[in-house]
Length: 248
Image (tube, rainbow, N blue to C red; front, side, top):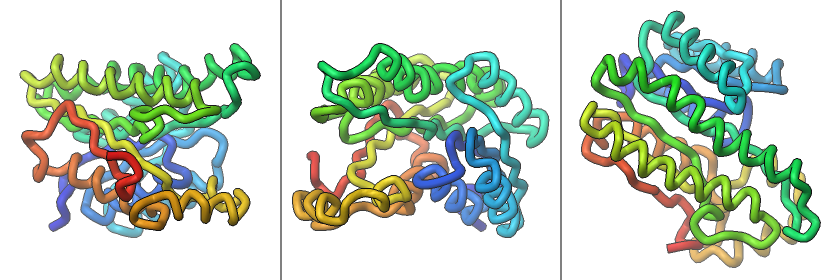
């Protein structure tokens, strides 16, 4: 029996990177997995098949979590297709890095919509089902940058800091209904996004981390398994940092 046997999870932005690792670990632990993708249609279809191979129900939805109406329709579809929604992982996110003096209004607004508003959209839609069930675990992906800031990422840092405040507020509002809400804050995680960067730059980042390496997507996924499972039933309103001690 897996740690998530019998549970249904929805993971947004799961076609690659951390989201993909979370979806796979959830399926390995016995969860039925619904997930979203936006542009990577082929990757989305491939992931559906990969998850189903673990003997669980898996379905990908092409949906934009930053669209309020689309997020509502998504959650309704998941509940109709799977019959439940026990775990929600808000992982969809983008970067539009630039120094503040060069940052456009568009790149600020886009980050806020995709990273922060998407959390509001999906959580608002999911709470109906979770409140009826009197249980649920909401996991919002923030970032070390949301806690400590980063030059050239004022928009991203603000969106991820917003997720922390949102998470804590949701935990306070929904705690009496036995719904938990926590945030996971990855540090420097090596994914497809970092593979295209200059190796010297990446090594410099590794050297600056006390554990002298970047994290693996699976190491974030393991924390999400813990938070989605019954091993964390009294943990809510917390930010769990996973960063090799780069920020303490």
